[in-house]
View (spheres, rainbow, N blue to C red):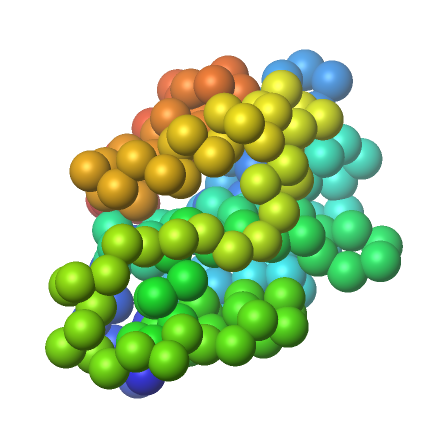
Length: 172
């Protein structure tokens, strides 16, 4: 499995950001890189924000897949853009485990012949203005890289500029 712990010198690329909807608009801030390694870590970082408005995290892992994490009192709601990523990435396996979905029974060499599919809650951002039907279209566009899909989510919800600013600041 591939991990993204900065302390281990992992070569996983990507970013993790927290998105908060406040009365004044959207606020986007970077999460620690350890969020790319562990769903539990990403959730913990998001819960520590203690914001009054809606909070969710966007994780772009190696531009291969993305994860949306939305903490809730009854447990986080999650969406994994490509379930096959769980074969190679711990954080994707964490998501499938949370969803009680088995890791796909595929050999690594079979991955190029299999179309990716999402697992999780397509409607986790519906109350913020991104209906599950639109999320399904974004996730289903396998011609796009994960960062492009996340950019579409940000544009649809109205925080594309805030996301771009943070990504510029962190050098992504």
